[in-house]
Length: 443
Image 1 (cartoon, rainbow, N blue to C red):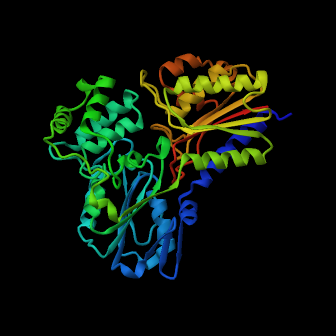
Image 2 (tube, rainbow, N blue to C red):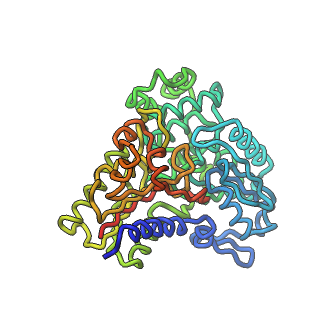
Image 3 (cartoon, rainbow, N blue to C red):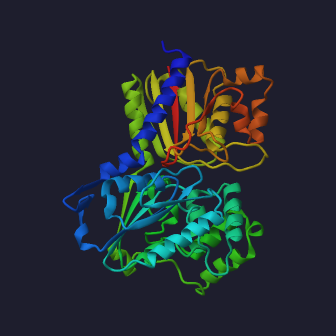
């Protein structure tokens, strides 16, 4: 029988293998082929000799790593480029410049980098090719407020939406409306150049118009949708009056809507997802199979309040122990997606660490269960941890250190709960981002 140490080690191996499968370099190699000056992307051929210049732009936690992979592929054919990347997520580049900026709340560095991208696009014309590299975090890392809205206004509304537990789809719906570049507007700025967007998806369902707030795709949302989101979460009083008035003006037709599917600017645009949460889950399952587990992918669509999702995952572990369903032992169940946390306390942590803490409470005393939750980007909330790992002994060990798990959960202080236990998952930035991976092992 596998002991708990082996289970914990296997959980980490499965998580790491899932991340490796969505490494930007690997993703680009799988999806792009270049030979005889012809670039093949999912069967669509681009004759690079037909273009005067090739420019690279990008935004997101993985954009610098993606740019390096494109540099390795195309070399000196690239005229120049600029990507906005989260602090600490850059890599050495030869041609493309990387600008480090704030995430998840946009900052002045992000605004400066966006303005540089826009200046670069003013150099482009009909005979140029623009390759746009988009990954998780791209929305916060491409700030360019609409007229009458300041960066501080955007920071306030982003924080209010994060704190109230709004989904990424809801957050991005509003971000698109109050931006000069999101919701398809970046494609308008690139036009009439040819535009190829290579995308690492960090949203549930891989909806193109939600990833990084859809800067290069038609926008399905409306100003009326945004007003409904504000009403749903009752945050009118927490957002700047400039944004509320802007949304209301949009509802009355006084502000132009974002580009829709029939806009001719999209005729010269190709959007391609080169990596996703589903792919990471498939790789994790493959690794678990190879380690001798009966592996099952639960879903890549998991969302909802973190502690409630953790209780459901713990219930699955208990069901496996009791009946062998939905998969026999030794069992591995993997799930993906992205949960939300309603901030009620003043502690430190992130959704994955909070998931692990809630799971630890739910599986207390179960000697044959390990649960891990971590972000594929290597960061979870405002911490250096990607997530945490828990097992049936976690609560007992915490009590020995004088900690009360329920108190830490109420204070949203999961980081300080797991740190003294040595149970944080610390990977450093992975230079990719396809949401979260959760792993249940039962033996």
